[in-house]
Image 1 (cartoon, rainbow, N blue to C red):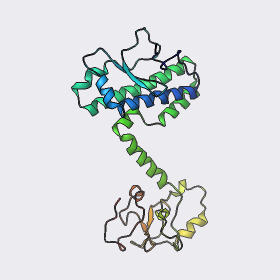
Image 2: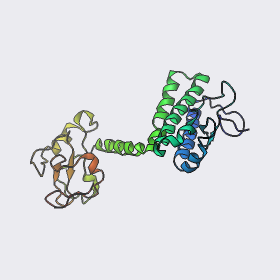
Image 3: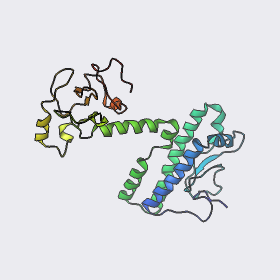
Image 4: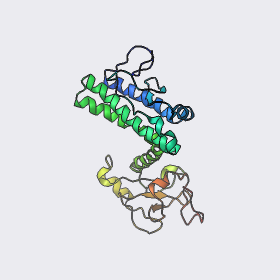
Length: 257
């Protein structure tokens, strides 16, 4: 008989933080599969004419739609009951989003059930939650918001890199690294005051003002002049998608993001 805990075989009981996290990732992957790549099969199995059905995810990255466990209390916390009843009463994407939210809640409850059962202390619980929280939720994956957040996070990370405009840009070629994202002074570790002085004579090709360490700058690949991002209407996020930047003077065409 296939158990709700770990799939086929003997009862499955992860006992360490890493084991519980692997269990969480496997169940999560299975449920994401049900709501994305296997969505047609999942949707068909959620027949509103049947009894209360649940979506289960297993540590081996598989999933199933089935009746709740018969024993009371069950071996593990139960997923949301009766997900099939809502299938035909709402738009498919809304139905899948609803199931995704309940699936996220179930994954948390299962993971911390193991934590409580095996006596995880405060540090262990915090470590487990941090590891889990570093992954997008099922809801974020199913609705596509995980990709959006990933792009925003990537932009923020790159915008904090320690690239600065040089007073002379000769010899830099057309390397896209010239799209410089500058950190504020208080975050700019490893760069001394002399380095600030080296760039103090860099002037914006648009407004003629000096370089400032807390401003975003971008360099034209044609004339190799540096510009304040705000002067040429280029944001750090948009610069991430520009392979070769042409300033307004070098191109009458609008740069595509």
